[in-house]
Image (cartoon, rainbow, N blue to C red; front, side):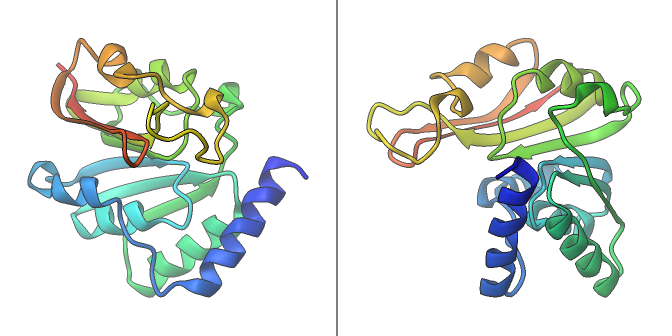
Length: 186
């Protein structure tokens, strides 16, 4: 089964089980920093973060490999008249990602890890713009999260990767096996 088919199947199951996708709780807690502008939601899934950001006055570009997820998000954006522009995109094909330098006030990635995206993310965020990321990390307290270690962050990896940015929030939750960062470009 290829990656797109796998995610299409997962998202079809999730659509049947939910009312509306919820935003990441830690992103929602950072709402005081979110003043609107342009946002990019990478690997957006069913769009919980995109819907939240659009309601926070962002014009959102949302990408995911799943056309099921993108179609669902397009329906939600139309239904609620939100400024969200979803598109199917394989983030592993970097040569096809053509965002302009310093074009976003905010970039969000949740539960997707491809370290090759970090230089791109750094280049497409405007000066004083923000980056939010949360994903799995290699926690000593959780042995099997059902996720390969190649898709898990090392301890404090995001702090090291974004050491030249102003870190406004960082959490490494060993019980949940997740690492979260919210930082501002200097």
